Length: 606
Image (cartoon, rainbow, N blue to C red; front, top):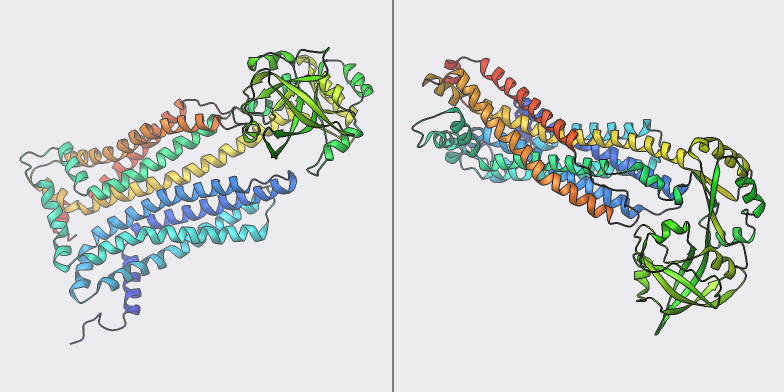
């Protein structure tokens, strides 16, 4: 006798997969939506970041590839956890619903491999259209953005995104497929009856809350997957919004504007070697220009920023040479408040030894391995613009400013004494508040024709950054909403599936004397465990994690404008969202039960 599954069964496996997909449209739609969102999110974000990186490298000549790759990797990991667990949970629940189907296949001779093949055929037929749709829409979204689209890198990012989402789907189907294939015919046929019996075992008195707890703990694995997916999504939401809301835009923009200046003029040097030095030899920062700016109504002060390059040799290590710069102190009063040890370099009558303040928090100082103390002397070869001089320096003070990479500071007078050229790098111009706009416009017009000067205006930069972060918050919000959909679609599937599976149980309970209201209370109580359990888990993990992450980011040099703020408005909104979704799911569950009478549900074969 030849069993149905003894010969080549590839066509049969595909046909069974097609029939299963047709018979489980609701489950397939929920899983497909998650695949679609995952593809859209990953394709959109990777293409956007790729194009932004290329633009930055072309315009600013900055290599930030490593940072961008880290961000993309983070997004991919988040998708792997949230989308992967959500799809895995949907398929796991689906397998539990179809134990009789798999039992019948095993009874007629289907092997372990063939059952797995049926599940994997379902994956292939289900996933490709949703993944392609998400990738295409993610690509089209980038086409309509104002950012320039680089076609070849964008297509490459789309293909890589598709491959990664396909991997997520493959990983998500793997465990459910093994579960389905490992069920023996008799065990599969008994699965539902055993689980139903466990619910009522040792239950002399049944009430809605107790029954809800028993149903929840009847399948701990399913409950764990669902709660984990929800908590991960909630934690991600709290962390991202914590970081976004912690950015002080005004403080960020203010960083390069020393002494609360309204505008600064800087040498328009490029990344080319010695470009700044060549501009200093033919400096646009003349005494004549300074006098013209000082005569503009509203200008209160001009703070020059000077710089000379030097090379130091670590004592006892002649092979270790480090190229650093000596910067002038901009704003004596504000700089003095930064001193953690020693005094300012006040020695205008002594020029044989140059007093200097060292920034101990600079990573470049740590890199040199120097361990200097107050009063220590060291020598450095200073490039004065026309020649190189060996200068003796004495340490007079220390600051610890992690936002500045510069190591050595001294007064502008000492740099003027050392330099054989005009070593002004920038002018920071302060204005009266009431006349700022007019004064800035006059200064801008005064230097507009000189391409050696680059002009930066605080008001313009602030407006630009505010618009940028406003758009960024919209994008981040959209991304977070998409990620939250993974969890809520997963939860919706769980709650609806619970109702469908337990229609027979609920009918028996009604026949035994429970009212419809008590049945509804049971459903609502179980839903509350999922919803508010995930809400509490998200808050308990997400809020402290957001706080710690913001503090760690703020410790990174240049990122001190990150300051954590507790998310009261967002926390309230998140609570309202969870509550509303809970109400919607509960109402929909009641609608499912109301479709059939008690007798019809008792007769139904699960």
